View 1 (tube, rainbow, N blue to C red):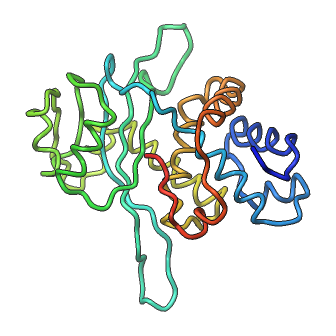
View 2 (view 1 turned 90 degrees about the horizontal axis):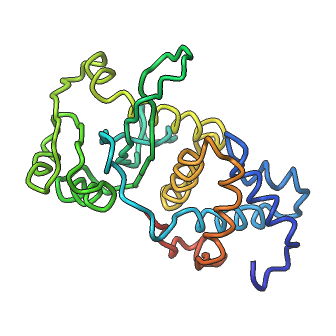
Length: 252
């Protein structure tokens, strides 16, 4: 916000809309709602706020709950390169599986998703996947994965590893990794809906950070609004030039 010519009220509206609305805000929506003259202004404000959505001292997840870990691909169809999809980005995710308290209400599931972590990764190698786990999951946690060889070293890292070869069976996947697959499905729906599937790979991590931030605070939207202001005040945001050149490296 420092040295910005944009009114402070616009920054507060941006933070409020991003954190309290379930689908978030695209730059086009934000520009229209606040009657901003330039799209670039809306884009930059939202990205500066996204830079304040990763708490530097955040805790590792899974200290008290089982953690599901899996990967998915995000990418859109491209023209002039044949049939199918191209240039997909690989995302690895980890989510806590928490049990519901017996509140006397009827619930479709007895478990629900706790804290979430998402990261754009270059590949599915063991080095990359175990690095993500080490950075995000508390040592000693129980981790559920599929049978991919990239997870073979988890047990040697001080974790309890529950692996199951799914062999492309959707019923097995639903039974063994229900929470992380639900998270991936909702994330892809959000990208296609709010952002029409048009997210440049160099900015994808920033959007995932926004999704994780709002997901982890979904039960307390006003707390999320206060949190982003507090974290943003202690963060160094990207400049306009850094954003558009791709020089800025989004926190993961």
